[in-house]
Length: 236
Length: 110
Image (cartoon, rainbow over all chains, first blue to last red; front, top):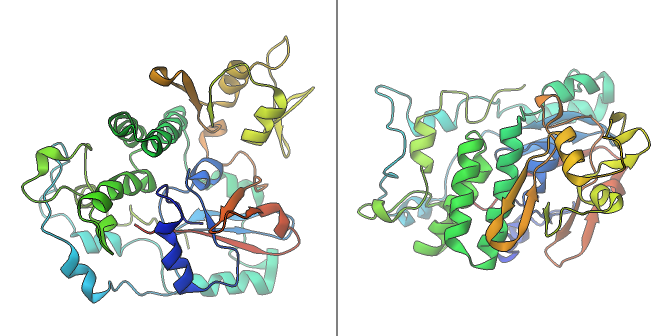
């Protein structure tokens, strides 16, 4: 499920490169967030033969690779910070320390294989009440955040950018730990302002253009304000 | 869901949210939430299910947020119906995979 509002072309090349044998679907309105509580990517959900969720959304990877393409770093221009972003804590962890902390990357695929072999007897399969209890917190503010995100998404696609950004900022305020809301919104400007193969990964203002950044924060600032294990919480 | 009118039918509400309106209330799987007297009313149902209603006054429409029962994203372990399209616009339903184990991976090109 590709959570991307910019249209199918933004996902086409990546899906083609993966050449999946399974369905590869597009989720332009982030239904995975509203229906299941997905708040970051990558996220994985396990569903059994009867349509019962046995593990709610959680971070998951096929292996422990964290390397970026060589040409990606060179393509990213020097970045600043949103003027209203939180200041990084003194002596806090670095960005890659936060991004690499939390969920066990090695062994996640083996956990899936264990469930495929053993079904409900697998140590990784949860009972129904545990699935509900361990799904993401959702307060009335979080529900309101989802509504603002849906309006932002629609307004952006309609070309009403200023109104869309106001709703993006509101959903970010109401559910600050929803990284898909934030990464989606920030990436739209990176895609526009930098473009190219990696422009969507520019999720902060360009150095010297901080005052022209309409969002309350940016990727690096928010990651640095996150505790170790907070970006991809450990669930295995 | 985004609506232009808060006067919505129970069938449309069920199609958009997965909550079916039955005599005992708004129901999904084993969970039923009683509704107010006088029949289905979108504002009442949204309030009882913990769905936020946010107005986009400039465009005369509203967005209805997802339910927030029990302060959790999932009200039940029964997977909701999910209908999405592929790159060619072909519609796919999660329920078409009943009878198989399914691993759903969310990702994004950013």
